[in-house]
Length: 190
Image (cartoon, rainbow, N blue to C red; front, side):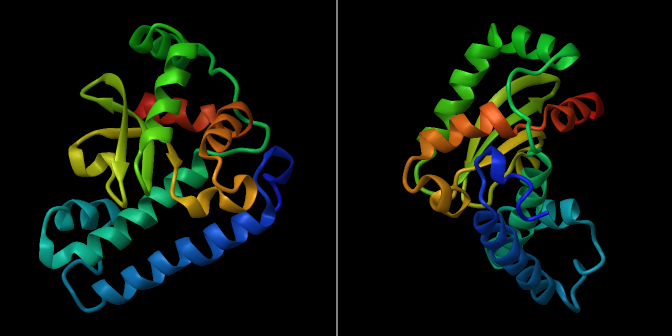
């Protein structure tokens, strides 16, 4: 439901604009760009990999990656999520970063320091957990990494709820919205 995340810091209005307008525009644009091309029947992941770094396909990359990034972001959220992970995921985060608190500090820093528009990610890079950030539409797929978690730090993701306070948005995401079950399933599949 559009208001499912409202008690956890994301207003229905944010979701309506972000999902209903921004995400939808990327889907519509991508469908128009690939119509009648050899990319039309490829998976989203294949389109991203085939178009990354090709200046003649920049529009296709930007739209396909943004469709994928946003879909991944929606799955990274859940009502009443957040807090520290448990089980194997918690152990792997502790092993990679020293503690959940250190992970949280590094992830928050990546999200807060991504200049302009972009994304903060927890990824598996050949079995090693890392925190990365990417500008604009770029994502871990383009770099051969497996995405485990993402936070959208484009202003439209948080401006209605937090105005220009990106750090408050990041804290709210980690405290109340992270879907650790989704992250754990991504890690198990990596």
